[in-house]
Length: 134
Image 1 (cartoon, rainbow, N blue to C red):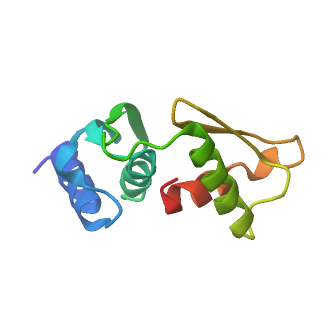
Image 2 (image 1 turned 135 degrees about the vertical axis):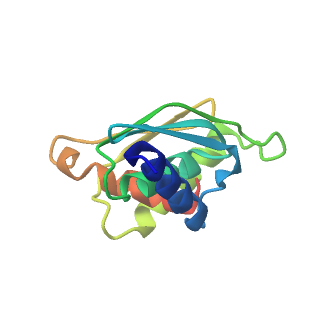
């Protein structure tokens, strides 16, 4: 088995093993340590979890995620007001997320802005929101 084939199989196994990822809609390709994930997931949190699962595999040098598309369920529609309220609650509950994070929601997509003092800890708010599937 070649390195690329083996790496692809290990990444697929990692996606299958991660309970926060439904790997049935994700395709995996590998070439010289660069893994490309393609296909569809149901949430942005699942997209982030797939990236993290692939990144944990030994031999992965880089991950191309620009092809992953999120297909939001039509029955789970929430207004931007509801989403921003939930995001702020999640951030407030997480003790590792610094104060001063500003959340913006537009068409269901959550983005955040941090002051220069909190920018160095930028992964913490993303992890908090991803883990609760805002």
